[in-house]
Image (cartoon, rainbow, N blue to C red; front, side):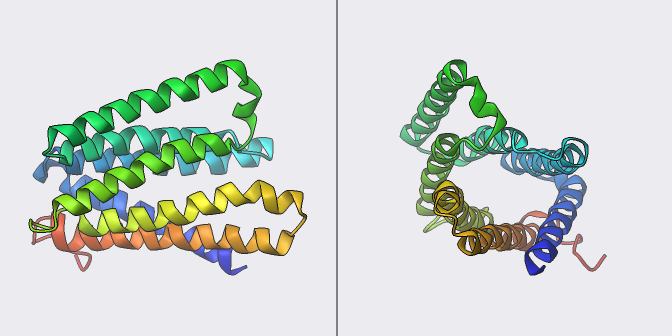
Length: 214
């Protein structure tokens, strides 16, 4: 299946990006290091999901670690990029608010931990879209730092959020062909996102002596 090929391509690109970030970690500033931590965390989550599904035949609960870690680490990443205090305050407020709301939800509905939580996906993705938009606005007349990474992230978040939010609807309508289509779309978007990261790593952040041709 083509989508399975793109799943593997996404994993390979993520692995390459993680390796490049190890090489460039000490030569870059705080935002780069936070984003490197994000990529390494996502790689660890992907490995865990593969191992868990082989043992238990399900790995849906791993999604909570994926969305949670993505939201928290990228919130710190964008916080480190912001220069306006009002933007920093917004990020801090949304980070605390979302964590509290999700904590309350899981306290009252712990069974949500064992499946997809659509509210969790929405509430952890929307703030990141807002932060990314802030960053793109801030660098309109400045150095395009993390430009392609942010563009790739916004494309992926917009697409994946729509995919996950429509999953339950399509399953309830038993439109399995449509479900397969949106699953494949999410896989393609993830691979594209990793390509955007790879482009930024090669041309903007790693020292010039480092390249993919080494």
